[in-house]
Length: 312
Image 1 (spheres, rainbow, N blue to C red):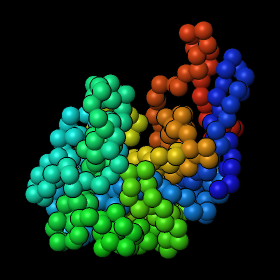
Image 2 (cartoon, one colour):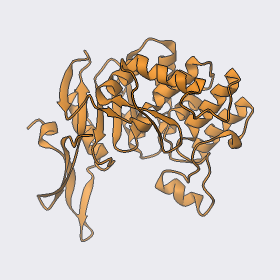
Image 3 (cartoon, rainbow, N blue to C red):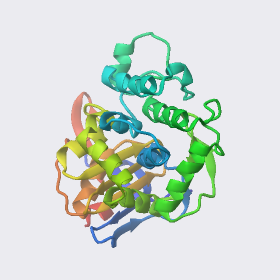
Image 4 (tube, helix red, strand yellow):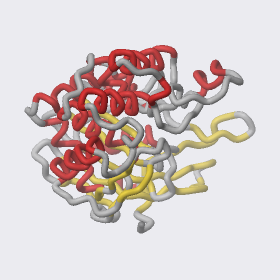
């Protein structure tokens, strides 16, 4: 992919020490593009930013879960006891256990939860994608689909997910990869990703409304305490937020504007700063703590949005 434009500056003692480049698009509530930075039409792997779309495809294939369970299916969760218990409840309701999960074993994602995990071995349940995979397994059980191959791109489950992607994005998937958790990755352009997320959030389709309402009602389950998606959804009404690995991020407000970005270097650093600056461009003013730069144990700078985002 192309490098993109500078979106963030790392400032130390009033000197720009480093920059993070990327691609970003923002639209207003009418759907009119108000900010386009970088290459918006090249395919990217949207990573976990599309878990809401995957969840919608599962519901469309007959999955029935509680709002809490649905929020976790959409999650890249921190790995708290509540997150793990909710993932386990999805499996239990389907009549299977953790052994049915085929996602890559891992320890909890967030620092506090990982510390509490201690020296226990990684597990598929503790991995941040366990909610999504539990939902995939449960969907297969409902349809009597083969469980051993549910991660194959040609499995009926994955074909349904691909159809949901293509319908909402208005694009045909041309590149297929493998996510860190082992699930298929269907590439979309950043423009197509934003279109898909906006349709998910604004849709009157009962399935899309169910996904949106579950995430809105249970933002903690979608991410975790102090994590950016949970914080943003807790602070702003009708806002849907989802992050993905390698610097992918989507924000959409029901009946409002929407934003999507992909950092060229895959960095998550400065995501809160970028969220505040880009939300301001669609009329949502929000204050979050600045991401500080330290020198000698004290604050000597910060990560700030680039001039183009500050509208200077």
